[in-house]
Image 1 (cartoon, rainbow, N blue to C red):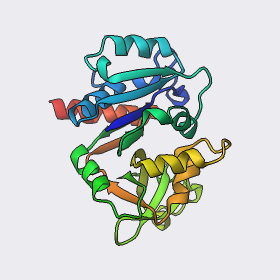
Image 2: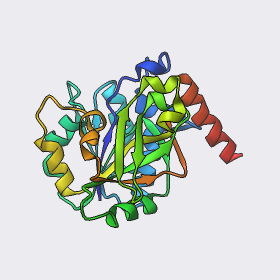
Image 3: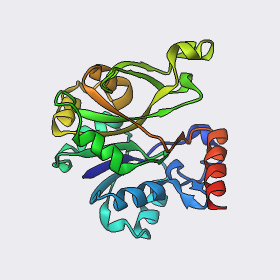
Length: 241
């Protein structure tokens, strides 16, 4: 399996922490967020990883150069961020295997990777990809998902603000922004017109009835605010104690 880790974001909501540190390198219990991704993927047979960079990219480059996983990583600097789908189009030739993992590296994710990969390999024949789900306490801040009896995506609503008033109506099952896709799925993504640049917003809603799902029973946190950043640190410090 190969992977694309999207690591170029500004981390605006985490300021001032990200004034001088790229979001993908903020420490969780002393380890940079990107380090958790590289460690887990390396342990689960991911043998080549593209990491895209933009904001404070030199720091990311220096981190990778000193990392024990540097032999796995190909860094790609984007002078202008291309968006998820733009990056997939730009690096399409790199992804030449049956399974490609695509993830936002500014999320903190601990999961059963073997179970996730198995869900992909055992997906229904009609499914082009398997998307990871998690349970969120704030459905208005996520892409909210419903699934059918077979675990296929049956509805997708991106950040429904009405969920602030009626969260039960929308539910708490959310898109984790982590997918494993087939070659056919990659071709679908690349076939979208260039103005569509976001995997979650522009592509996943088109996959109703065609995307398989996998529920992360571990930890999944969007490290997007000081509060969620503090939560991730508390959880990891507690697990280490």
